[in-house]
Length: 514
Picture 1 (tube, helix red, strand yellow):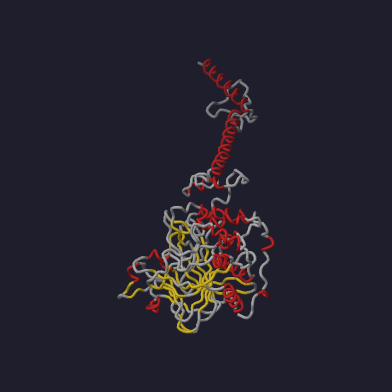
Picture 2: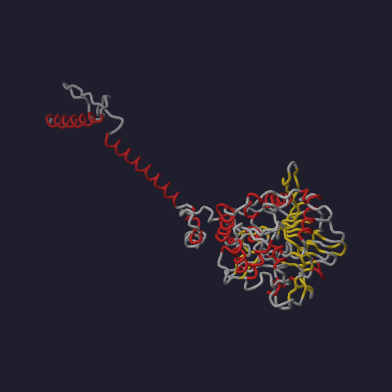
């Protein structure tokens, strides 16, 4: 029995010794349940803080695998959030599938163009209205803080007193008189709303050239042709005629068209660019005023430059969007002048295309519409009597077209019921109104038409009324807007003699006798 116990204890001591030797610990160890054997020396057994080298190797391998997985995950997230996938998320799988790559010139690099997705290079921030009557402070002029008051939330409408100085108002009026104003009286036959889009004027090539020559330098430049957009109360160019004029401009050795060259281009057209279709229309008068367009690009008066920059700062939009929008429209309402309530912009549909971007898309089977994201209305004088800007349904709870006719009275008829509009603003020289014609799409771009932006001009009862419209054109299709931006920018960079024409017209060159 003693021999067995000694044998067992000897084997346990040997195993413990081997285990402790593997761990390499120098601390003594005595089994707690075994008393020391008499006549036998105690073995000095060592214990280790780490069980084995194998355990250490396993931990290090696991740690390195974990780090490699983290790095791989970061690469995966990075490449799956690239610009190409952002475009795909918006509905276009790639730039080539949207037809953009086929439009690139041979000199363009084959890689993805960063400007193709306008949502990355441009955003459309909106000014917060907070509440009706809320006043914000804005800095639009050096060393001067101005107040901007919220007049309405539907539509989002602001009033900025002192946006223009008295001198600036006078210069804009004088420039409009120098350019020459044309009748903008528009009529629409009863029951035929589409005829409102038809022009009432048939102009000669000389008159057409004068309208297109926005800076009045006797030369028709590409930017002037591109910036001319269709307007509901004036003249227009069809896409076919516009392309013919652009082809003639490109074929000119100087890169510009003189009046003689323009006459030859017009002779080759199948239809006169401003020829009216179907003769003078008879029906309800929708507008009675005179208007003209003032070019604000290179070579124009420095005050027009300043005005455009001020609109850009006020709207808080990227300058290319404002610079490539319509020219400044100046309107004169004489006594009795008015305009019925209307929307400056139009709802978009798959079969429509924006007037300002029609050259960047296929317009053969499309109807052109006005795409005006923002309207900035400038009062150039204080009207003696009447002439208020009316918003008939501003801040209504709901918008229904049937509700516009109340008791047999049409609220859009400013001649009869201008005083029944929900909101009326009296013209004051230098004051500006800014409102959004479209809602946001929730993704930083332009959404649906804001029906509450319906507005008109009450009849002038005494004196005259001068106003100017500065519109910011945006295409609801952000890819088409990008193609238009690229088209115009590419042409401008290669336009000959552009540097010589970029000197603004000094104030001293303005006729002072008007």
